[in-house]
Image (cartoon, rainbow, N blue to C red; front, side, top):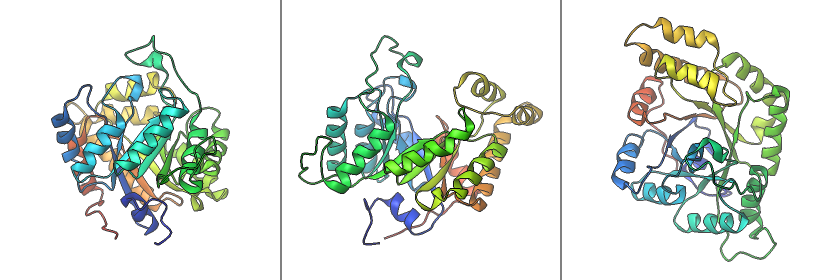
Amino acid sequence: MNDLKSGSNLEKVLRAGHFAFTGECGPPKGANVDHLKEKVSHLKGVVDAVNITDNQTAVVRMSSWAASALLIKEGVEPNFQMVCRDRNRLAMQSDILGAYALGIRNMLCLSGDHQTFGNHPQAKNVYDIDSMQLIALVKKMRDEGKFMNDEEIDVPPKIFIGAASNPFADPFEFRVHRLAMKIAAGADFIQTQCIYNMEKFREFMKRVVDMGLHEKCYILAGITPMKSVGMAQYMAKSVPGMDVPESLIQRLRGAGKGKVAEEGIKFAIEQIEEFKEMEGIAGVHLMAIEWEHKVPEIAERAGMLPRPKVE
């Protein structure tokens, strides 16, 4: 593995051919380090890396790079997220250099939710560059050792570059081509939107495999366990780009009082078992959404433990 791009644990796990397992943690809406440490403690040793969201849903939180640096101190590898909504190219490049200097080796490049969804709807979106350009920017900084303006960088940041993919947004036929564009821009790994419509996702992955995209990039399937029927209904009706089949909502409702959350976990475990066997899938990304304490149980029941150690 002498030609590793970043040397991150996540990269090593994927390069070694192991089925990767990543988690996610939203930083606190304040400077409460103890709260962050408590949430992350449930993920330590259970996942290969932890995504640290960047003002998710356009709500102000502790900065992703700062929370990522705190994770490193806790012995947990972060996947630093950056959205295009909040920064121009100057701030982006500056933060990438700072993140690398602090020991951060994975980065997920995202557009970011529109500010009208968040707690500062009067804020101005930036979008100086888009997510596709951000992927290419990080690749240029890493591989060419140059800034966007072609000036040389003193010590380029060696970052394992991630991007997101939503297989369920319209038009469906375009989704695999947008994925191909992100891979061409420089994405090393992809984490997908939460998957609930398995039939549609199987069709998406068939197209991915037919185009050979899985051989150019590691694809991690996104999973969020349902906690309640209300959560499923909200995601089905109110979250853009989410595809929650009515059959899943009926399954949860049929579980009965007090058993819905367990049924949601059962479905997530079934998904992991299928993804292990699905051609083109290199791992799963579990977004627990304030349910981090349930991740060890899900990992154990899904046969994801112990996590591999790759030197």
